[in-house]
Image 1 (spheres, helix red, strand yellow):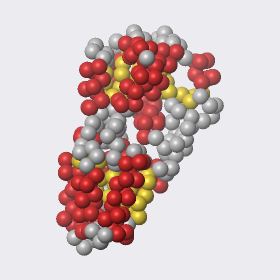
Image 2 (cartoon, rainbow, N blue to C red; image 1 turned 90 degrees about the horizontal axis):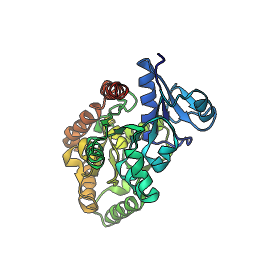
Image 3 (cartoon, rainbow, N blue to C red; image 1 turned 90 degrees about the vertical axis):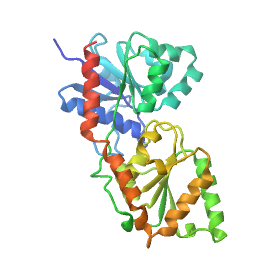
Length: 322
């Protein structure tokens, strides 16, 4: 009997999105484990180049030539909504962002709900415990599996705070709120209340993976004002690099950020005060923040390749046994 093939639908845009790397990593792990797996792109010959990979890819024409709807599986992102049901055969929904996934329901109506409940959808993948709990609650009886992801601590290498530069890195989400926080901080600097005028603000946008690592290795502080993270990959990469990473104590970020780095949504004052404390201590007294940097590093390093493999292969063993 021939083994089932596994296809992961991937976008054709080369913009850096952590979810796309997560897709490629799944295909790599399955391939190494002996499965026939592919990242499925629409455009012939396309693959992502913003991170290094040799992931098996396939275009849509070739896919329809070899896809066996009775035996194979296709993994589709939550962002497709009701379009998921347009694909025949057995399907898995890879839900990489709980919030955006549920927003699709408002656009697609009842058909999007039907996609999750259809008999052809054999499983749902969730990227955090927070997402897992909410998906299981929303779709009783569905097979929902927790997927871990991998933070490459060789690429996102740790730099102690004493080696950092006067850089504040900002996760490229909620730009209006980021602009507000930055202007508030600069206003206080002009009033002599902080030293932020000596710092460079960097929006983490448009970098390939290696460039991202270089920025994070230099940054003293990394901030995110997004409360709708699926898993918060960028903040974890920042913590792996030793950044003092500040974010909102909401959703999946509660699982990864040290508690003292979590802030209430829209409590810009508390976050700015923390930024002022850290930057005011740099470089002479930055050592008092070193334990917090190392706590973040420890959190990031728990996202290992081995843990990712165990989650993924266990899920597929169970799916194929259904």
